Length: 94
Image (cartoon, rainbow, N blue to C red):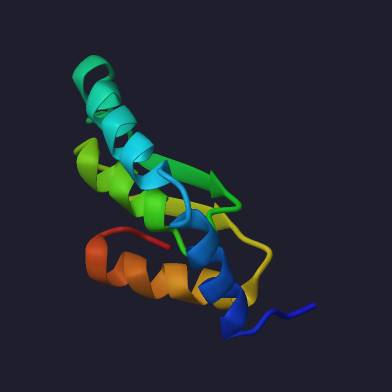
């Protein structure tokens, strides 16, 4: 069943309703200190939605991936992710 653009809006509202963004950014800082992901060449995301946090994670951890594979059920979210990746990480194969 295809979802329309309202699914993305509802998902975004849900994700922004708590303190997840603060917890996520704090956790990224900790991960970046202790785990070096510079040698990673590919990334698999299962159910990333629009990819908001996946892209943030990849940028924050200074990874050098050249391939990003996402498994996303919602077609509109997958298209949004594809476009966001082209802007944020243009050298990555999708």
